[in-house]
Amino acid sequence: QITLKESGPTLVKPTETLTLTCTFSGVSDTNRGVGLGWFRQPPGEAPEWLALIYWNDDDRYSPSLRSRLTITKDTSKKQVVLTMTNMDTVDTATYYCAHMRFSYHGLDVWGQGTTVTVSS
Amino acid sequence: SYVLTQPPSVSVAPGKTARITCGGNDIGTKSVHWYQQKPGQAPVLVVYDDSDRPSGIPKRFSGSNSGDTATLTISRVEAGDEADYYCQMWDSSSALHYVFGTGTKVTVL
Image (cartoon, rainbow over all chains, first blue to last red; front, side, top):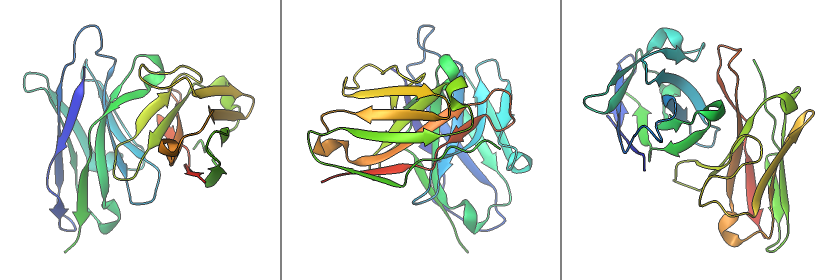
C-alpha cells in the first residue's frame, strides 16, 4: 500500500523560495504506476496541477508556473522534492503530492497535504 | 486551455440519487476521473477511467461519459456522502496535462 507524506514550511515570505518534500513508501513493482505529481488547492477552490515526475525521471510542468518550478526525485531516500521560486501571497494554498496510476494518470493515492501561507 | 464545468451545488435527500455533471468539449473522447473531498481532507479517487471504482469504494458510486458530458452518480445517498466532488481529465496532447473541474458541493438534506 502506497503512502505519501508532504513536509515543508508552513509560512514563507513573499519573494522567498518554497521547498516541499514528498516522502513515499510502499511502492512496489505491482503498484508503482507511472510516478508522482504535485498539486495545490487554495481555500475554497479546485485543485491545480503543478508538476509531475515519472519513475524514469522525466518531468512535466504546468505551463503557467513552469518558470518557477523544479521537481526532482531521490529514489534512495524515497522522496520527491518540489521547489517554487518567488513566492507570492496568491501561492497560499494546501500543497499535495499524489500517485499517478498507469491508466490515464488517475490519482489514486494522495498525501495528507501541507498548508503553506505566504505572508510578510 | 480545456475547461471542465460543474454545477456549484447539488442537494439530495438521503436515500435518493445524486447526479453530478462535468461538461467539456467532446469530453466523451477523454478519460475522466472523479474525486471526493471532505472538509480538511485530501481528495479521494472514487471513479477512474469514466466508470471504474477503486477497491473500497461502494458500488453506489458510478460514472458515465459521452458526448460533452461526464456524470458521477451517487445512488442511495447517505449523510457521509456530503462533500465536494471534482472531475478531472488527463490531456497528454496539451502542456496542461491535468485539468480539474470547478467542483460541486453535494449537500445531503
